[in-house]
Amino acid sequence: MKDKMKFLVPVDGSLHSKKALEMAVKLAEPVGAHIDILFVSYFERETDGDPDHPSWLPLSVMAKGVSSAEEVLEEARKELPAGLDAESHVVVGMPSRKIVEFAAANGHDLIIMGGRGLSPVTGFLLGSVSQEVMEEAKCAVLIAK
Image (cartoon, rainbow, N blue to C red; front, side, top):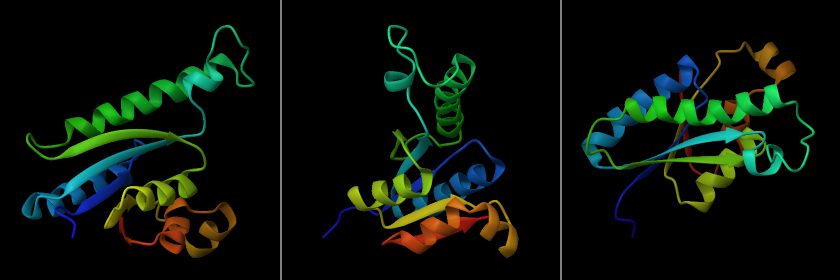
């Protein structure tokens, strides 16, 4: 039997991911749940930012992606009340796939994430990370709007 509930909150710096984190805090505090804050990057400094090995990405793009992960997670940590059991993580890959894999590998009970608020047609044409996570996750998914 698990001791604590575990919530996963993927963040990307958007207003919707900030709302998801706020919702996660409200749900976690009364039950003492653990929160994992996850940033999914398409690339990382170790593989695409080594100065001795040229990257396939322009430096302007590489620098923005790495600093973005650090900045987004730092902003998310600032929103957490003192004493809340939480950790932050960065993984590399396709966001929907990595979110689902992270949740399964770490035994999360609930994924709380932002939705972009796309119409069904726009979501179908552009794709939606939250829609893909809802369809593929083995645990419950709560979408904050």
